[in-house]
Amino acid sequence: MSRQGTHRVAVVRDERYLEHKPGLTHPESPQRLQEVYRMLDREFGADLTAIPPRAATLEELELVHTPEYIEQVLKTAEAPFTHLTLDTPLSAKSYEAAWLAVGGCLAGGEAVLAGQADVCFALVRPPGHHARPGGGGGFCVFNNLAVTARHAQARHGLERILIVDWDVHHGNGVQEVFYDEPEVLYFSSHQEGLFPGTGDWTETGRGPGAGYTVNVPVPLSWGDHDAVHLYREIVGSMLRRYRPQLILVAAGFDAHLEDPLGRTKLTAVGFGRLAALIMSRREAAGSPPVLLALEGGYGPLALAESVHQVLLACREPAGYLDQDGVETGLGADLVQRARLIHDQFGVWTEGGRTE
Ligand SMILES: [Zn+2]
Image (cartoon, rainbow, N blue to C red):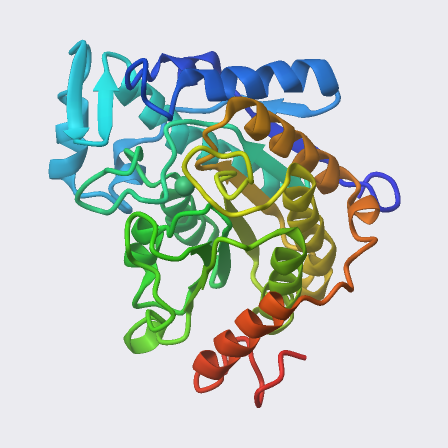
């Protein structure tokens, strides 16, 4: 911390992320980041450390993805328009943006692990959490955060990484990559019944990874107080008991009440409160560094304001923690159900209590 209660915040940004153009009517449009970058210039100027992305190496991509799939993406280079999958069209420069989206997260991760900042927000596209080892989809090409986690394990020897996914969709790609191992604890809250259809309560990990995947499907009425309640109890317990050495956040903003794809009711300030919770409660884990990576969020103005609030909350969490103690019926129900399922593993619960 540079001042009491104040964190050093960095961002990754690059104009080349705007060159991924999936089509005029596609929700994952360049306007999303254009609006976010405009907000950065207007609200923060030079206050935030800017980290340029680097190109990921082939070896790094292969930490998660198959050589065949990587080649399939590279073959789309310079073709005016191809479909990776039906919902994920690519333009001529999409492969480069996707490559740099991984590299932006790697650069951000390296910066926080080296102590150059306490927290970094990689403002990249295309998003990543639906990308699986052998294929993209759901607007995702490469799994930006999964590669970052694998790299942190391989290069920095990390043994415990927490991935928190507050995007309104389930991060099926992230889950698949780490489903069998205890070295990565994956927590996702997502709207029930939505794409891609995975993320049921009963998907809890496998073998040595049993209990290290935690899914909480939420109903449409899910709002700020419910989210804060859930994250305070579950993520708070994970920080105390799992003690991650690095926290990665799949930061999608399509759970926002104005989002055209998600139907839940979070606000921009609500996302700020989730970020503030993570930033303040991570002290229980020895204050590990935090990297957020942009995932979904399809109303450009709501997205930009949500990122704004998250950056403010990362810098000075105190102002977002006023209502930290509010309990909600829905929040309590979700926490209770998660405990019932996960008590048997004891990864983050203890005898039915999360304290
Ligand atoms: Zn999403």
